[in-house]
Length: 228
Image (cartoon, rainbow, N blue to C red; front, side):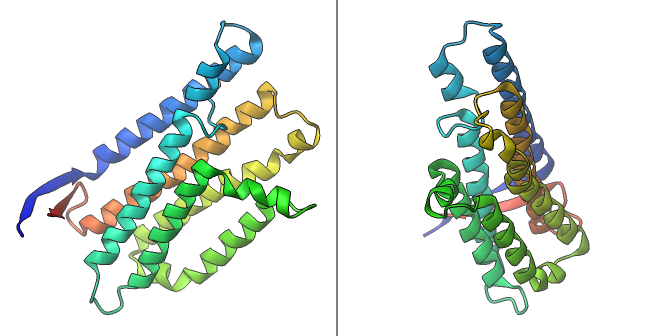
């Protein structure tokens, strides 16, 4: 069995590409929901919900969010393989991160977290999300401390941004749900912030991980060898 040629991945180009797509999706959401609720354009309902609404499972935004979560998970798995057998490399933590990102990707499409609202009466899923996020942060402290300072800081900032959108903004918009005002322009504009922060957090994590994998002095490109 041979190997394929090495591939150089430009960390900055990957980050810029992902950021550009995410920004475009957020702008498209804002423009489309504004046009929809203000009756500016004769938008077809199926076209709107299927392509532009970031709060819908059947949309480009949801697909992209699930995709970058898978990318983050695959990179963590790849990193776990790279450090296999290296003492003090915290390989189990990388594997747990890989599993976590893949589960988040699945949840992004299937919306399992929203089922909590049905199963547990009187408690919104954001309460459990905040507790899980806090518990995971504490559990990963030894792993984070082991990382280089720059990587550690970027991972923490990425996590805060992601949870701030997924849990914080969601919790802040509960009043719309209680007032049965989800089908309104203000609520859908808040969705742009929520989903935008989630995507930004994931992309920042991917950027930080790619730079970490590239190593000192190799910050602009990561060489990857794919096995046959």
